[in-house]
Image 1 (tube, helix red, strand yellow):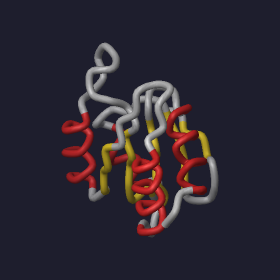
Image 2: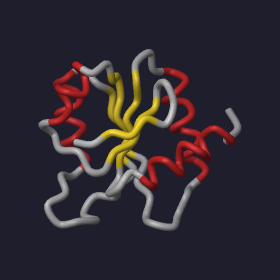
Image 3: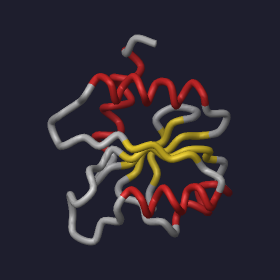
Length: 112
């Protein structure tokens, strides 16, 4: 798992697996945000698997699926709310981390 820090509390990554959630909790993360639609790639765990592992590890999980090239503003507003409400770090992930980075930029501009 390769993480890229965007600011003090937001990081991005490519696809994670359920096995990563306990490690993320130990690293100080309190939430994960999935920007990757279920079924997008071969071997990709579906969000329900990630959500169950997150819950077991004591993390929040939010599903904000975006197809490549789409940036729904309601997702940006939901990410903004998540970032405001979390005490720990938040990891946004997709296939490569690019959509998670772009949604973060939109979230910074979104209305509260």
